Every structure is written in structure tokens, then in C-alpha cells.
Length: 225
Image (cartoon, rainbow, N blue to C red; front, side, top):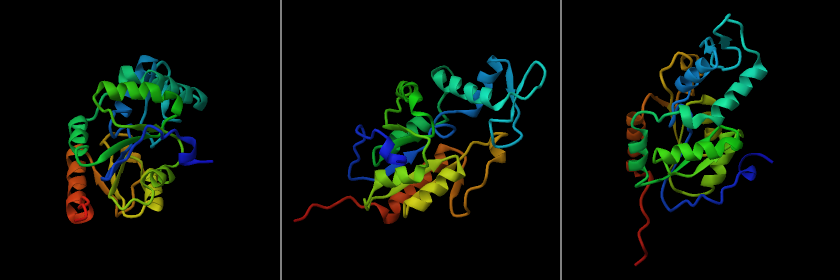
């Protein structure tokens, strides 16, 4: 069993309007910057030598590379304490609020489900009250199951090329947006396919989404006479 079969989606109610599915880390909430500060508080440093966390975290005391098992535990500790560290990206709160007037918004975060309660509280505190799913499964099958055979527009936003490609493989006619911060580590990130638009902030993302809706892809149903 993979994807949607493992998720509790009982809290999700989609209306007869477009759907925006949005990643969270480094898309809605700052991740890499707060994580670096978290590491420093533990006596470590992050060296952006590749698009990975494992292998790039060292001791501030002697520069020794931190072993993978310990890095995995540090990531878990960060997510356990995320409410103390993570902050929203610029303009994300007001932008999603405006977009939600015309579309359903859903957060799909690549995170162990056991940290979902912390993330839910953090998002709620920021006024981002949209439904949340936490899963480490491929995102394409999940978005496909959520959107199903609806003829309404769907948008997917992520900072990871592999997630965008996964959704493209499973959801036809989905507007794919590669929203990725300009950070030292993201400069090592694999590029998304040429037909996937990259943006650097929510102003540009919103313009793409609104143009997609206005292009005739979404026409509200007209009651029969």
C-alpha cells in the first residue's frame, strides 16, 4: 500500500472549484535557514556542498563530519521543535488567503506523519488553516487520488524537481510551479523539466496561478434553466 491509502483524508472536503496543492518546507515555511540556526544551537554547522543534508553537517568544534545516523536524528529533533524555529515565506499568508477565495488549498508536506501535530499548530498560528497531509510517499499518486477524475483545474507547487515530476506523471493538465528559494544549497538542486516554470517568490507564483484560472480553464457551473 502506498500513497493515499495510508493517509487519513477524512478532514478534506473539496468543493466544485480549482485545487491548489502546496508543499510546505521552503515553499510555505522557511526550512534551510531555520535549520542552520538550529544546527548552530547544537554546536554544528551546515556546509552547502551538495543538495543533501547528510554528508554536509559538521562539528563546529573540529570540522568533523557528523555521521548519517546522527544527522537523521538532528532532522527529527528539528521537526519536533519546528514551532520554535520555522517562519513563513514572504507574502505567503496573504497570497494563499487571496487564492483561497477562488480555489481549495491543501498542504502536502514531505515529512513523517508523527510530526504533523506540531506542523498543524504552527500553520494555524500563522493563519494558514488549510488542510494538511504529511507523507513521505511519492506525491504524484497522492495528488492523483485527491483530484481524481475532476474536470476542474489543479495546481501543484514544490521546491523539489522529483516531486514535480511525480505529479506530472500522474495528473494530466496540472499547472506545475517550481518555487525554490535562492539559497546556497538550492543552487545544487536538480533542475525541473524545461516545461515546468520556476519562480522565486509568491508574487510570481500567484500571477501564474491566477493567469491559469483566467485562461478559460475554470468556468463556474451555470445552473440549468
